[in-house]
Image (cartoon, rainbow, N blue to C red; front, side, top):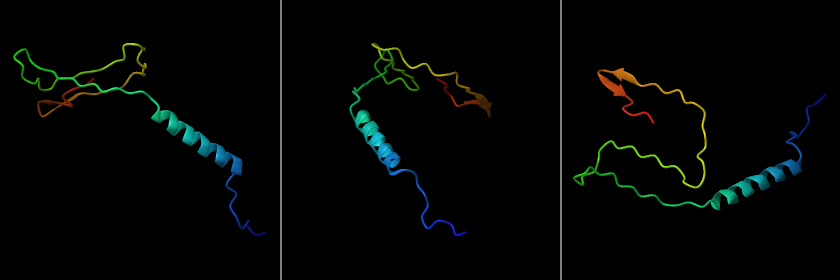
Length: 86
């Protein structure tokens, strides 16, 4: 028996539905409100504070709770690598 001349790629309706969902997801992502956050971290004498870490969380909604993250800080040649874990 000969193999079919064309490869069956699923129902055309399923492809159309997938394309419609992709377009809907892209338009929804374009409508997400955003804001600009500018932060300047300075020492008491007004100089930039090197190595400062700033985290931002929304005030009006609880942040997403992520599962625990396995992070490792190793001491390599008397220096910690990475030098910061958040």
